[in-house]
Length: 602
Image (cartoon, rainbow, N blue to C red; front, side, top):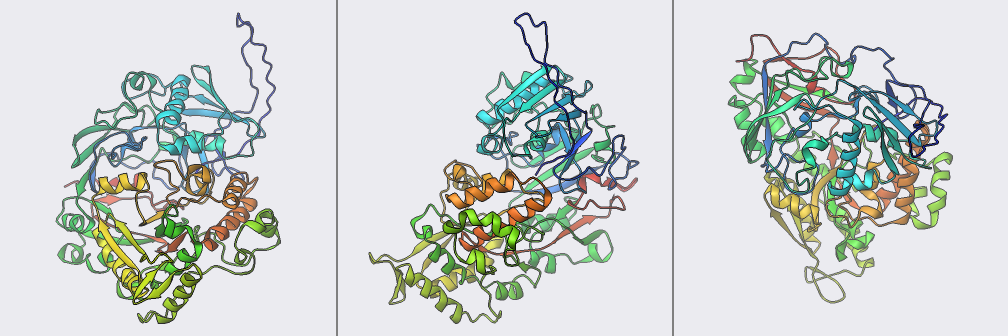
């Protein structure tokens, strides 16, 4: 998400006369970083993060797999499919510490100044900051970047940064963001995480269209070569201006980062075992249980590891498009959840690898796993009459079975709910009062998911429903999701350890009708809107946790999705050519801190 800390004193005298006899003066303490809540871990003058090896050797290359295709290097717009790794060519004002919940430190910005009430923030840019073509990074580039992204970028940017009142270039190296009277304390951090784009490059180009023109950035890597839709190679910039900064020590160690594209995960795994690429993170329990065996594993040429993490795992689910008439009734949505037999699926398909998800903030202290206490009830009371009664007196749990595949009891409960919503089972068909059978499409992009969805559809058929599975390619899938042209999809809502402004993009009414937003469900609920705003305004960590739990409960009891499952570990495999620091970051895998073993490149 994004970050905090600091106090500052705004003395500013401003009498800006037409002859510019006076210029604005802002007196505030200059800080080296900012934390969302509490204090920074790293003091002024720190030399490197604790989870890196500052002496890591540079060199070598690493090849990874990407699935699908790409037709653009512009990942900031909703059109086209951007290549994996394009973020490597850009820098932001601040860089994130992966061992803190939400703290940022100077990157393009040498320091920052923040108002006590966070109504404004000033970033002081480093004079040495340069784009890859040698041009300096200036305050005008910052102003231009936000204007471009909010006007022509993906809807996310407009929604996320709508509370920015103005951005001023005070000097070539000094830029001020004004937020006005707002309780949104996160904005001072989130603006620091946006990629800064070069004005001199983009002002003569059409930003709104996908393009394979190699863009100019200020980050540690350059696009070295590519084969459209098949392969892209990034080259470490030997002249990278920021290579010696504390936030970059021990990172970006590979000379070359390559992404090879494959049709699907199964094909990609076989290529990996054949030595076609070097590192992969596995997301299929079946492949993890059965696919990582053979001589290359027995001989130790490929190493497999399972690494526990502390990241919130969010919500992966069958997402029901509430814009569709069938799914506008919460009783229907609740009923359909009884058709997903997680326990049988986990045992027979997933090798018992997963844990059932019940919360939108699973694997974190922010998950609503107990009844609300007095402090949380105070947050919920203003919307008491607008939310399901169970929010106050029941703990939500997704439907469960004993795992033997016998779901008759669960399906009876589902049919009772459907009957209350005016659906009747007649002659093996679930019909509405007009005599129309319930029918819908489950849209997939991964063939591997067909085996997960098939048992779900069989139970739906037993309820008299006529479901179908539609498998499409990545480009078609992306376009249909962006235009909300689907009934049900399998997707998720990732969460960080410090939820904030992105919750608007997920759940708020204002994003429900914006093409390409993350409000895939189509939620338009005043109570949810209210709780999202309360979460964003949380003054401290304690209130953030309480307000997130309150939002979680309301989302749970509205039955917007059919929860699936999660795992609180990384499953990785790599050819034995790498080394890594002794300490891993608390909130990330930390692959950007790895390096090639000397002499092991081949």
